Amino acid sequence: MKPRLLITRRLPDTVLDRANTFFDVTLRDKTTSLSQDEMLSALTDYDAVLPTLGDHFSAEIFNPVSPRAKILANFGVGYNHIDVAAAKTAGITVSNTPGAVTDATADIALTLMLMSARRAGEGERLVRSGNWAGWHPTQMLGLHVSGKTVGIIGMGRIGKAIAKRAALGFGMKVVFFNRSKIEDAGVPAEQLETMFDVANAADVVVVALPGGPATYHMINAEFFNAMKTTAIFVNIARGDIVDEAALINALETGKIAGAGLDVYEHEPRVPAALTSMENVTLLPHLGTAALDVRTGMGMMALDNLIAFFDGNPVPNAI
Image 1 (cartoon, one colour):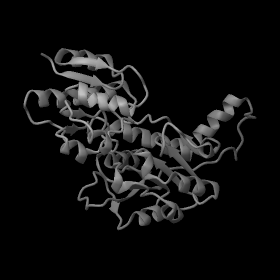
Image 2 (cartoon, rainbow, N blue to C red; image 1 turned 180 degrees about the horizontal axis):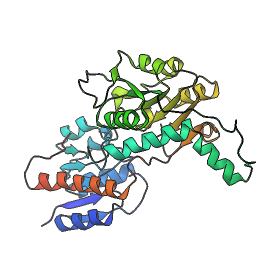
Image 3 (cartoon, rainbow, N blue to C red; image 1 turned 90 degrees about the vertical axis):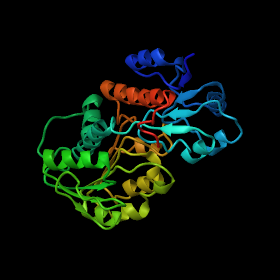
Image 4 (cartoon, helix red, strand yellow; image 1 turned 90 degrees about the horizontal axis):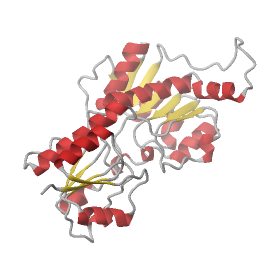
């Protein structure tokens, strides 16, 4: 008998076809996060769950149940929505999908960097509004990123991919902060002692940290105060790494010049203060939104599940 698998969101068809080959699949064909009752049922009614961002498997979800499920194969590299320690205490393995998301997420970082620096979102809205009066020499002057300094907070796989694009594509100087020593960033780069040193040095700051309690509100008012008033702030990591109220204040008071965001502290809710600002580029969490990338993520999640039920080591166990 095939193990029962709950997939909490629709995935690409090729992933679903492969899943049905190995598992008795129930597809929850909704785009919303699991409710608490749905999470409890997922743990008690299925042998495995393939959840994703927004499915908040907190310690409270694991405590009252005697779970049938033995593995949560997360669709995504970030897993701060799952209390991994509580899952392990309940006898549940947790895995993720690293590597598959690296290049796509780095691409979005550069998209936001360029859109914010060159005021592309503002310009696109101007054209659509019908109010564009034509080209003139001082129209919508922005920041030319070539040769400028990019500061990266978090030099893991994604941080290194961003550094490579910025250095090799735009000739940018790379400075970065990382909690551990990085011997090889992949391109010429300078590791600075504190993230505030990076904030002070950079023309564009990009956050590429993992989510979780250790990084919650790590980017705060003190950080924004350390940035140049001409600098752009970009976040492609997790929304709650940034104190969103402090970011809004920094933008409203001119402590920083602009921001490009793909993630939000309470997504999908985005504060009106952000949506009303012309100097903010806002994307709907598009970091990995490419068909081949999402397919790769799904296949990696299935690799973890198949290995688990075959009695083999889970390739990406957390």
